[in-house]
Image (tube, rainbow, N blue to C red; front, side):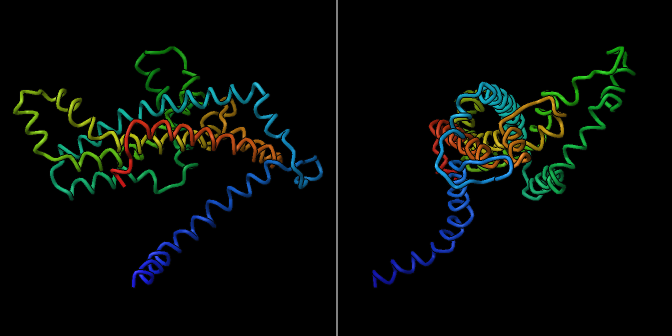
Length: 285
């Protein structure tokens, strides 16, 4: 009977295992194999075992510059989405009392995700462009004498696009953590004489660490690999690791792109491991 129960457990895990192998492990294995291939102009893939694809990645100063720019994007976007996400999640969890209204407000937050990422990024162009609404408002108010050029096709525009895209991924896990907080803890803090800020800092924030860690993992991983936002809002003047890989793919340089992708994957895994040291995300799973 025990052996039958063990087989049933294996069968239950089999579908998810197959999905993991086919859609994650196998593609990663193929990218690893291709990263050691040789290539030429008229022969895209030459089966071989060479290391110069990785040597080019680590020996090029461009690699380190693009990683520095991408890390800067990650830090800025993480800080902004954390503040926005925590504030919105706090409002939804502790100021909206009815579940119906919470669901309605969450649906409002997801409306931008009903369209593709490209359309959402293009929507910023008439707002931030030289003749966009922001520049017209600044000129009308007399704040500037001429249109501000750095609003669009700049790092500022890229950060705005990232915040627009990924704030929701910070809101949801933090909100989930807040909804698990026992209300008696907040009442006890109030009875002990803590004001609102002290309750937030000493009670809510520590209990929300797993949600903050999960949201941070989402935001950091997606910013590290994104290239669409940089292409659309950077206007060819902003670099990132994802954009460098996309450029190599567009030139059919698959082996160096695969090597660059594996290095990026390793960096993202290290970042996730560092984030998981601050909180036990298994509490939220």
